[in-house]
Length: 345
Image (cartoon, rainbow, N blue to C red; front, side, top):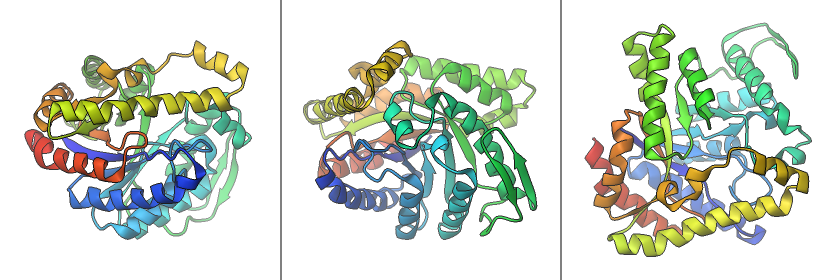
């Protein structure tokens, strides 16, 4: 099982943005030093929930300051990007990093309607835009004299320059928040990223993913490879003892969840808040039971055993919860790398 760092830094005020961004670059370097497999980058706008906001720009900075760790998006919100501009940016970063890019894509946030309004977009069109962008990306990376006549974009592309470093193109993986989208990826023979879920739901979805791929006609080797290339998100804080982990980590997790909801209450309209309430909420990610793993190295390893047994290839671990200080987070990352990860290798 591979382990990676989800670099998702919160900055509560504009005055703190610079420091958090600088600390995030240091955290990326530390992730490579500690042997994590991937640095995953998020995308959120206008609320400080993700201080660097733009994963493409930040990926370029990280690629210049690291040498071997992979860099992925979890995820880039495809409705907010012009597909050709995004394809060019990925190709450039893929060259700068010498082939370390993983292109994680998604429809975008289901609850932060103000992000779509800020870009002048209808959130109800985000999923269809995602599907169209995915097609454009693959074709633009692999086809000369490419023409696209779609619902949202009409494009004529002689040839994309620079061309991607990885051939035929960087791996592309979609985030799936529900079972329906997960099984859609299975039927298409594609790996996927799962958001925070209970261990039981994680095991169930991985079993259904495998069986659905098999029923769709994929052989055992292809199923195994896609499972190995799939990832699941967990929020984790490690301390020297269980008591210390709960004392330090739980308050930061709670404050993080409150901050995210306060932003929605403040920036979403009344109608948008009603629409949010009518959707399936992320109950697992909000609860202490399923939303966060806090403990000593042995406790965290024990808690991760069910995830490991699900067969999923990797864990996307959000270490720096909320406004957690850099040094506290760095100690947690080191404990995980040195005392938890070896249990699964």
